[in-house]
Length: 176
Image (cartoon, rainbow, N blue to C red; front, side, top):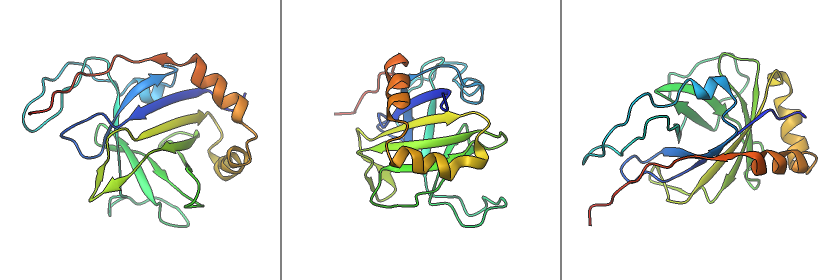
């Protein structure tokens, strides 16, 4: 198997414009697992609630101070707990797939998008980002991307999706 870990994030947050909450995962990737919430946070008028042990990320534009030794600027970025997790490279804008690597590791990550619509910097509700991690494959990101686009890893990806454990999702309340 090439992919070792799987995480599925969905736009559930009401107040945070770019927050994505983990709804299913393999719960096996140390770089993500160490970023789980250590305490519950109650919802307020300025912030969405967070359950203990929940995992969330933020999907948005690349911050101007992101540096790195890259040959071209990334299209988007994923952050967790205020730190850049991965820059996203989207070679084909007609395709719902992107690639990157996990910062500080030698691991590749493939992103699969579903219903991601960003209007005025805010992700529309229901958008989904799936993350497939290939440990030790950061130098082969583009090759993995091509393989996924050609359908060469569909069975492996579907097996990870089926084996994923559902996550307890934070109850968010709208002010109506």
